[in-house]
Image (cartoon, rainbow, N blue to C red; front, top):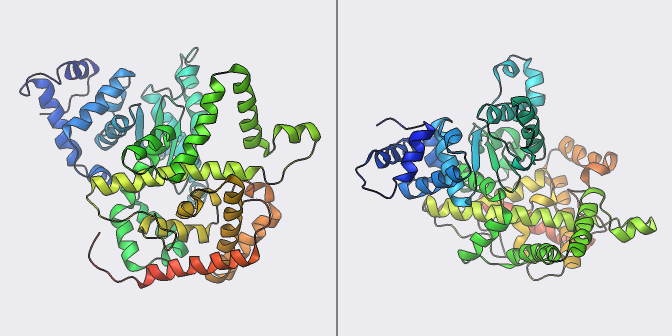
Amino acid sequence: MPLVRNVAISAVLLANLSLNPANAADDNLNAWVTACNLQESVTIRAGEVSAVELRKGMITLNRFGHLESISALPTNESCLSFLASGHMDMPVIVMFAGMSVEAKRRHPTVVARLRRHYEREHHADRLTQANILLYPAMGTGADSPETIRHINRGVLAGARDHQGAYAATTGTVCTISIPEMPFAEQSQLEQPYAWSMLGKNDREYLKRNSDSIVFWHEVAHCNTDQSAEYLATQGKGDQQLTDWNENQEQARQACADPGLLEQWSSTMESRRLTATRPEDLATGEIDPTAMNQMIHFELLKESVADQVGTLISQKRREKRIAGCASKTYVSHPWYRYRLASSVREPDARYMTWISPWLSNLPEPSIHQVLRDSHRGLMLEAKDSLPKPLWMELNHSRSSRPDQHRITDPAGPADSSRASAWKAWISEQLDRSKGEIDLGKN
C-alpha cells in the first residue's frame, strides 16, 4: 500500500489508530513501518522501527500542526522525524544536509570554504517551502515565505555546528541537520590525525555505530532538560545530571519571583555575552575566569547529549559496551574518539570524556580540573600532531584570544597536574591502539 501523505487522510489515520488493525489507517501505518525499515539511512541510526513509536511521533507532530509537512519530506527524513518527535514529545524536523543547485554550480574552492553556509541556507529554504516556522512566537506578521525564511535563517544561525551536524531549537520546535556522508568517513576526511590516534577496534566500532550516536546526540540537544530526565529514568542519574538539574533549579526558583527572575537572567546573560558578573560591570573590573562557568555549562549539555546518544544507540542496536564511567580509563570507543578529537582541536566544551572526573566537585574545583586537563591536551597535541598543526593551534591562541574565551578555560593551570593529564591522555590513546579484539560490540 502506498504511503499516505495527504493531511486529511493523515488526520483520519490518527483518528483511527486505535481501531481495528484491518482498517486503512493501520494499513497505512504499517506501510510507513515497512518503508522506514527499508531505508538504510534510518536503520543505521535507529535499528528496527516499530509501529508504536511511529504512531507516537505522528500524534506529536499532528498536535502541533506539522504532520502534513513532515509526511511530505523524503521518506528517510520523515521516518527519522517521526522517531525523534515521539522521543522528545515535541516537533523535531530532521533533514539531511545539502546545497541548492545554484550553490553547487559555484567554484569548487568557494563551495569548500562556504559549505556550511550554503547548507544552512538550503536548510532554511526547505523549511520555508514546507511552511515550517521554527520560531512560532514570532508568527505574528510571518505571513510571507520571505518573512518565514528570515526567521528560520536566524534560528539556524544560532545553532552550533560540530563536524557538520547540529540541532537548532526554540523550545517548541527543533530541527536537526545531519551530513549525508557517514560520520566515520567524514571524520577520516576532516580529522585524519584524530582518526589515526584510534586503534582498529575503535575505528570499526565508529564505522558501525557513530551515525546512530550522532543522531540521538542531536535529538537530545532539542531539549536538554528532558534529556537529563530521560537519563535519570534509565538509571544514569550521575553527578553530571545533578549539576545540570541544580543549574536549572536556580532558573525555576527565579521564575517564582519576577525580581529574582530578572536578577538571574541578568547574571546569566552578562556571563554568556561578556564573561562578566553584574558586580564586575559596576566596578569596571572584569573577572578573567568568569567565562569558565559558561564553558562548564556548555560541557554539561554536551555530556548529557553524549550519554543519551550512546545509551539509545546501544539499546536500539543491541550493543553491549560499557559507558565512560571510570576515572581509571576511557572505556567507550565514542569517548575515546572525543578524546582524540580534543587533542586535535582542544575545546573544553567537547571534553565529555572528562565527566567522571568532575563528579562531586564544587564549581571552583571543576574550573581547575578543566584548566589542568586542557593544558594537558595542549601538551599532548604538541607531541602528537605534526609541527605545522601544533604551531597553528598555539598561534591562534596568542593572536586571537577572543576566539578562545569559550574554548579554553581561563586562569593558570598547575604544571605538574597538567603533565599528569598529558600522560593519562597518552595512555588512553595507546590503550585504544593496543586493545585486543574480543569480538564485535
